[in-house]
Length: 325
Image (cartoon, rainbow, N blue to C red; front, side, top):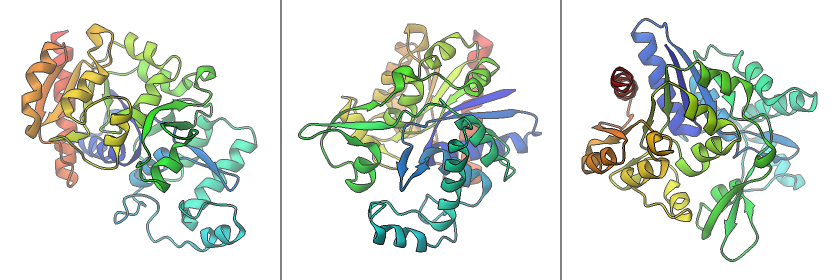
């Protein structure tokens, strides 16, 4: 089967690792493509930084920092210290030396005229990832946060420096109206047997992917079932500050509300199926009434086995949707 995952960041990385291990344990014949959010990318010290992509790259390569949950393992930060002294990088955004190697390579290739898709391919060839990563778009579509009492700021400043504490009224992706979905992403979706929406931030990781011109149309046209996994359990985010993002767009922090936010594909939305945690079993019936096939299953990805179990549940739901189509 051709399996496509949409998302970005740590939650997506953990889910994809579970899916990859599921494929390996069941014979290793399935192909996995990941359409990665690029809207939280930005420029720092003349370098193009790509947090969502790099979280996936490092985790799949087995070189990520498990303690911090982001960046490379066994890092040093001598270069960041120098950049801070020179005043060319914000003191609140620290980059490790190994991580900087990735950013320098990425920037050099981009300045040589390579597309972001080709940069993804080159970065991915270094390790045996077991999956193929595609940018949602080759264009730059940096996210800016709309604030109630001041001018918009880049998402990374709001997220990292201010810890999402500044009151936000919305988000916008600069340049997205002139972007197009990457050819790799569109080809993967066209060939998909299953499309999975990772338990990523629905507003700033999944939302921008869906907003890229051509992406919604591709997802609407696919014959593959589209199954999402909630990143909200018992009214709380699993990781990060997605609750602040949801509040900014008027969505309650609950598995039910996020499922409704995505909407049923049969009614012009995104989802055919939706996985919620057992703690949110009460959401199953109202989501089913909306036209979204919903199951309550264990969502916590604590280790390889629980991550594989979640991947199996997602594929199982997709299989039941396909057989009843």
